Length: 165
Image 1 (tube, rainbow, N blue to C red):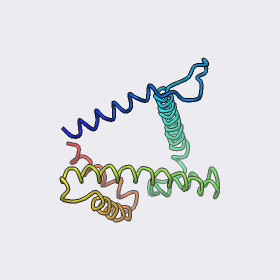
Image 2 (image 1 turned 120 degrees about the vertical axis):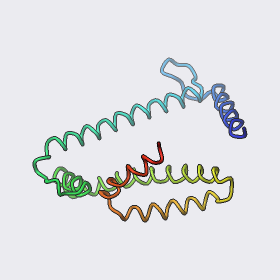
Image 3 (image 1 turned 135 degrees about the vertical axis):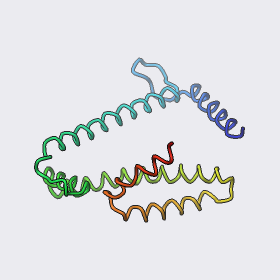
């Protein structure tokens, strides 16, 4: 019940944003509310993220279709993508790719760690705190990350299948 009350409070607070006018004007020359501005930015971010993800996956599909004859199936996933990036963009491309993938992984890890820790802390009703679950998840992730990409991809579907059935 407490969770429902918090959700309702959030919705009421978000509703109040409709009455807060920004100092900027819309393209039609009228003041826009903070809610309108927030909605427009969220929609723009969603469309941009979708387009960028489409570009990434189309690029990966193109790479897979064009270079499949150049590499054998013995090469690992990580080695394959690094060889492709180096062949296409050189050493600078490898560094740039590493930075981009690193940033993407950090943001995903922070989001998953914090949300999973909050969920499990609430599930345990305070017996184990949020910080305890954060430490546990980080240690578990550090151990699993040392297995290597190919082994994680091979083993990963089994726990996910158990968890989501």
